[in-house]
Image (cartoon, rainbow, N blue to C red; front, side, top):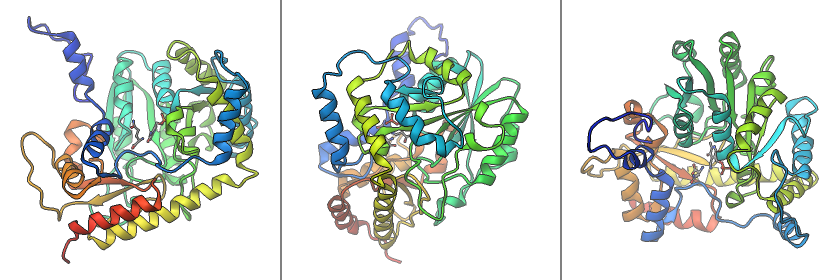
Length: 417
Ligand code: PMP
Ligand code: GLN
């Protein structure tokens, strides 16, 4: 997102189509995955697992296709899936969720974000985005005619731990105006790997209630939390259930990002609002894939799948942290998600044209070293993008073989200490 697509321009050469195309720009993920494919780089950029989904998940999809579940699903979600979601999430939310009124199945969490913002934001409303934010947040806010208001997390560059990055609650309070409607929260946080503590969430919750706001809590990495960190759902804090839309994603949970199944969990008033937007976006979500995710969720707990997934990622995290540390890139240990931010300040790469330094370094890593990483500047608003000049984001949601190959190639950047 490079500019406000809603801006008016009265000049005779104004081309409204070109204007919006320029404003929206291309996602950083499309650019870097294309570059990785073109150069044969190991793709530790875009966050998608390159290993197979579990057999029980794939078998559920095959069975759903064989069962001829081929027609439109219920707009709010295939009954078997919303029931399975209510079963899994009721204990986690500490309440009995109503599958028919408190859950909406979406086309991945991406549509959950878009539909929630469309549902709740009127033109002119302000929406607080905490930086770094997931790159679709500003696009969703601007497409609804809302105004993003940015509040950056603050932390020491070169810090060893994502937990060192914190929200200045006074800065958040100062950003709230009578026009503020919504706060977008992401925990665990892409790209930092920060997991908000209960204390931090309680401070946010106090402000939200004092100013009569709503929270969209994007929790797609909820199962990738590494002890002793603990995933706290803001919706479970006192007074917050009524004010929160919580989003999840089967793509992350079952390593099937291409299936594009997500969900929103909220009290009936908010869930209904999300549904009213959702019915005009995709209307309904793929029926056989919803059936497959339902079966996967039904089997997940008996198979201890969630614990297995978090242990798998913890081992991969530690492996990549070791590699990055060894070559001198000072990685920031994430408490959650499958991303690691490193400090690239000791890499000497010329920055040419109007490129940002983080973009230039990541292009160099991809093209010259053969390992793709994502520059984090697209996760910041223009005025704050220089905060990421010395950062690159690597993902560890890859096979051990791929991580091994990346480690071998990254030896070439080894920094002499
Ligand atoms: N939110 C965050 C923070 C993400 O990193 C992603 C990544 N893909 C999404 C939402 C989108 O999820 P989905 O693939 O389910 O649309
Ligand atoms: N969420 C993934 C990431 O941050 C990518 C999603 C996408 O490509 N849009 O890497």
